[in-house]
Amino acid sequence: MQNLAIQHEDNAPDESNDIDQWTSEILQSLGNTPDLASPQTHEAISNMLNYAVEAYQQLSEQQKRIDYLETLSVTDDLTGLLNRRGFDEILRRTLSNARRYHEHGMLAYIDLNDFKIVNDTHGHEMGDFVLQKVAEALKTTIRRTDYVARLGGDEFAVLFVRADKIPTRARALKVHRLLNSLVISRGDIEIIVKASIGIEPYGPTSTSRELMRRADRAMYKEKALNKTR
Image (cartoon, rainbow, N blue to C red; front, side, top):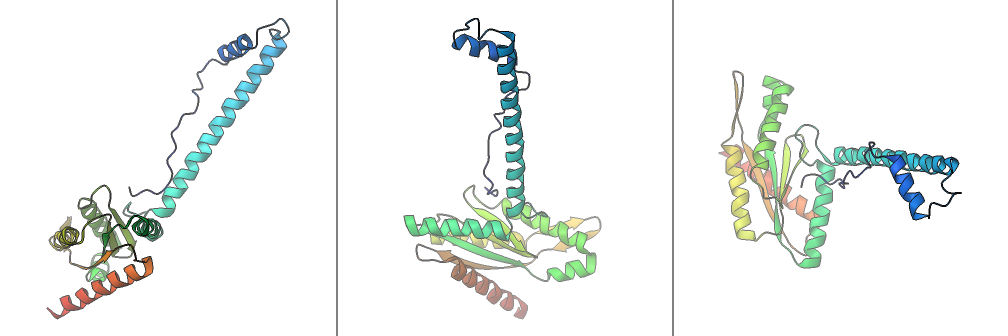
């Protein structure tokens, strides 16, 4: 689900396949006349089959490399979640389907409060560890049809796809409560996670830019309220 790269099955021929057997089958299908049964013909067919197998294997390896690079281009190296580019593409597709099939769902925009203090006090290695644990926690909260991404820094997003507004809002708030009850320990360091969330529903008329803007604005509104408490 978090991977946009096209997957290809590896059906490359086994190198152990007997080229001679294939050659014999080809000759038999052609009638196996004396001319075709000559050693020269047998060798020529065998060479062509070898070339074909080699070309297939090279194309298969090339496709694997392409798939791997496509995965890297849409995946956050640190957390394994979708990155901003991957999420933007998923959001574009989701809203396109919403317009076409009159679907609804919800976007949750999440920001970790005072995360800079973690980096400044305990170092970036500890900060990265916290981000990884937050990502793991978020992944446990979503359905197979939903998406979670790290948009950059300490900002995350969860896209609840094809979901009714009221129960989905309850699920988004559950994510919020989960993050704000998260305590991350490493060695003698203990980090109490605090997060702000902006929740915005989408529907057939929603656009990516406006949806992100509203969710971001809702998140910062809550962050400001948290500072006054």
